[in-house]
Amino acid sequence: MLLELAIGDAYGAGFEFVDRPTIELHNNLK
Image (cartoon, rainbow, N blue to C red; front, side, top):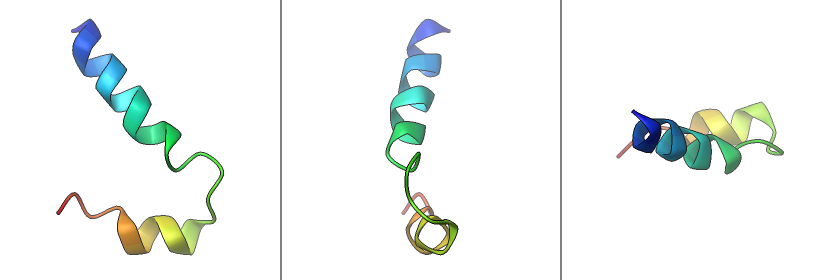
């Protein structure tokens, strides 16, 4: 469970200081 939390936290950190349109454009998990 801790591994999943760490992965989710690291993934979300990449979008922390980015504007919403950029997130919506690139956050598609492809």
